[in-house]
Image (cartoon, rainbow over the protein chains, first blue to last red):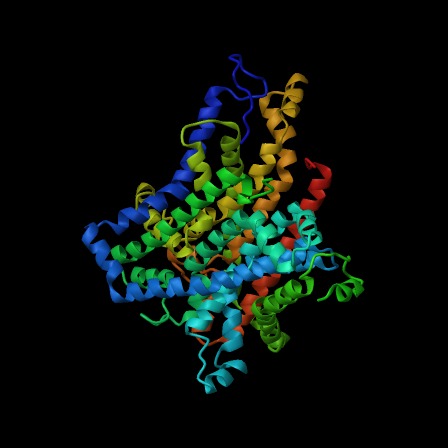
Length: 288
Length: 284
């Protein structure tokens, strides 16, 4: 944050008048109010419109519980997969010089520029009843589409870059000096990773995992295409919210939505905490 | 992946650090399985349509209308975000006011809030009887369930892209540049529009491009507020979903491929503009 000196009382010619400042702040806050704060407040107000009892009832109802369980299950599978990938990709890209590195980095970012609906569609084409793979797997009793594996795959696709994206610049900044020192002192590859690299990147890693998890639990478009919307079976929390909302059961829809909003707020709080403690971008940086 | 093996590859600089083969191999395998093979499937599927069928889907009026709405609303929202995003960056970086830290943190809300939650919240807020929508009802302006509603949702989704891209660059600006401009007789308005903003242009363009690209593909937050009337407020991702529900895989695939191609082309163009403006103005 810029801490430019503004202790003097005459007005700096490279500064705006207090009135202009106030006006700009008010415009900015009004904009954020209309587009960010009111929607967030609205979620909780609508959720409690009919009192705490209706709120709790919407959350303990069996379909809601199974949606919450499925969302947690999907995140528990998808996030670690992308975590392992993120660390491996960052290791290869940040610690070595090889041709085609920039291209590989672009490919990793690819899911960010693809519509979530298309991310779901590619799996429908791959595993659907009209594909080669779908019916073949089905003959062995393996269901991918309109079942949990499809939801996991679509979630993995959309959350693919999060951890790698956070780690690559961080590990590139840190260079290879620490690892080379550890190796020359006789540490094995794994020891170097566990005791030298991992402590250096742990906060950046946590940051990436947080963002990855928030997206994994909240993904709607991709999951909606592959899930088949079977209540109690293949409905994640965001899909459950959609169904309730379309049935005009607004209190229940916003009650489930409020859980997701709370998750978002916790994510933001932890993210801010990491940034305040360990510098901008959540990247741990070199701390020794 | 012994050291002798790795040092023999010409395309890689020799290194004493182990694990190159393992990590790169795993990354490539995982990348192929999750991203590349499924995407290739999409392209292959489109190729098997043949040009005739592909163009008949592309020039179908409903497809064209959906693409026009998607790209049009994303463009308007990205422009609004570019303007207000810079303003918000400015007050966050330059001014001190109560709650600044909190607001700074909250700008990331659209990254963290699930899109479906944002969608139902915005829809109920901007509906004719909602908190904000009610203000516009007397003037006969409807926001939710019209293309304006789509723009509102895309403004929400895109804002942090602009703010988070511009903010670090703005923090780096040397105040001496502004002081020099003031000393040379520029008024504050001139300093901001002729000295500061041109230097921020590459960052603003990047943020604009990211917000735009995200907006074109956005689905969750839009479908609740859009009203989804064919030819009026039906976005391209929704058309893909509708085609899939009709088991019209050819239709879904063709629309998806067109969207992908246009998005990539636009990102490329914007990247070129950005490279050009960085050479010309950038604070590098």
